[in-house]
Amino acid sequence: MKELRERKIPFTIRRYLPDGSYEDWGVDELIVED
Image (cartoon, rainbow, N blue to C red; front, side):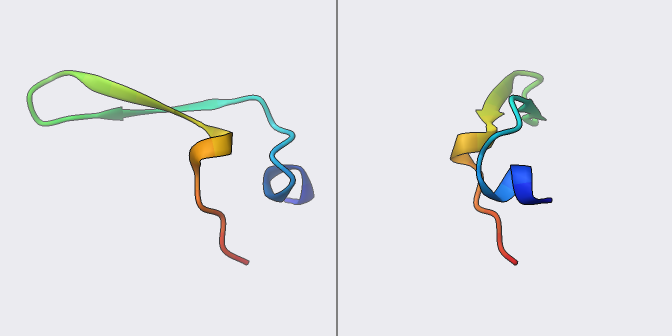
């Protein structure tokens, strides 16, 4: 996943919280370990 490590993939992860709301995380905010 070279593109993911280089932060080239333009996708967003939506994380749902217990109260029903959600937060969106861009790929640039994620920690990617090899």
